[in-house]
Every structure is written in C-alpha cells, then in structure tokens.
Length: 304
Image (cartoon, rainbow, N blue to C red):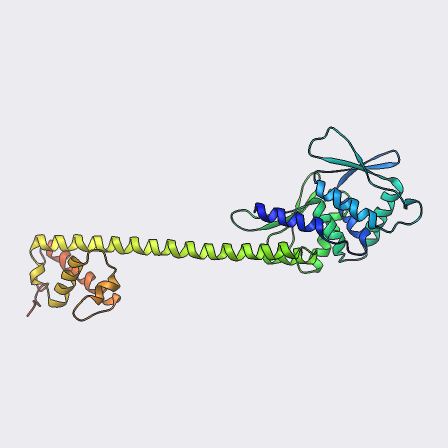
C-alpha cells in the first residue's frame, strides 16, 4: 500500500502537461477551499506536490487580457502541514470561467486529473479497494465529476459530508480504468499486479485452510474408528466379523492415521472411499446392536 501511494503521486506530479493546460489547473483549483481577501484569492492545500504541479502548469497556461503575467504567490503562515498561496482576482476569474464553460463539456479528463490530484486518494485496505475524491461543497465540482463518471459507465458511490461531497469507486477494475483515463498508467498496472498477487495469496490460503480442515477431519474419523475397534475388541467380536469387515479393521489398526480413501487401497482387494464408509457404518450398527444385547444374526456370516 505504501509503495503504491508513492507511485501514484510521483507519477501524477511528473505527467507532462496536456493541452488545454488551463483545464487541469482549473481542476486543481476546484479541489481546494479558498477565501477572498481584497484583490486576491487565498487557496489552502495540505499537498506540496500539488502546489508544485499547479505552479508548473500555471507557467504553461495561455492567459488573455489583464490576467496575463499574474503568478501564484506563496504565503508564509503558521499553519503547519498546509500550504497557502494567493492568485490575483483577474487570473482566478479566468480560471473559474474555464470551469463554468467546462460544465457543457461532459468528459474533460484534464480537469478530472487536476481535481483528483487536489482532493483524491486511493486506499487499499486488507480487503477491497476504493478510490475517493472529496471536492469542496458549494462549487458544483462534485456534481460535474459525478456526471462525467456516470456518462462513462462508472458505478459511483456518493456520501454527503459537511464540507464536501465524497465520490467513491470501489470496483478494482473500474479504478484501473479511471487511473488509465487520467494518464496514471504505471499506477494502474501496479494496482492490477497487486490485485493478482492478492488473488493468488487468497487462493493459496484457501487451499491451505482446506487441506488443514481435511486433515483434521481425517484424523478425527480415524480416532473414532480406532475407538470403535477398541470397543469391539472389549466385546470379543472382532474375530467373529465377516472377512471384508475383519480386513478393514485390521487395515485400520495397522494404519491409524491414513484417510478413508487410502485405507481402501491397502486392502487385499482395494475398494472405494464410499465402500469404506459403508462398511464402517455397518460396523457401527453391529456394535450398537451388540451393546444392546441384540446379537441375533449380527455375526451370522463369519470368516471362512
């Protein structure tokens, strides 16, 4: 999980800018909360790598009119673990205009890439996978993103919170598709590799657990059969058993821990597991009747 977290953000931060660059910058901005102070918009983010990418994209954006030449200005604050920066009103207005115009374009993956980097995350707990994007409330970003994902066939879970609207993908294959759509191909491949490894490990664990359960079951069956033989010996009826049953009893005494299938193959005339089970049930019935004193005809077929 830790390795995949590094991979996803390293890859996201290193992606080459894709035209129109302003769309991705708008996505990053839309994923942040902000305040207006005079002629500036103050934005806050806990992710330094996101601010670095925004500054790189900013330099490649094509600005028009009075916004041309305006830059991002970092602000030193006492907020630990958070980066605060300002954008001039004219540049911010132009960015917001991109977002508003984008509402008419359903599938803008540049914008989605920026929004995911700004407020998205990928989680891989012990069981399952989920990708979450938490756009701030009141900006329309969550609704726009939900429309894009649904138009592409994604199954989107939605959870409303006080300050955001949380959108979630839980299907591993859909998460891989989403990552590929926004250009994170290496992360998508790593996630598929993780899924394959998990599947193989789960299958191996099931086999081990199944084998252990079968072994325990076989040992318990053998223990009960040895106990049945002891009781029959106490009653002195083992020697009087019919030949097929006597052979089975002797085979079990010689092999106290093998499975029923293996036990059947040790007999002079090998028999199937189902036949072994049938003969043990017959021995149990004989012992039960003998213990009750109803021994008439129980041992009528002795060995010859």
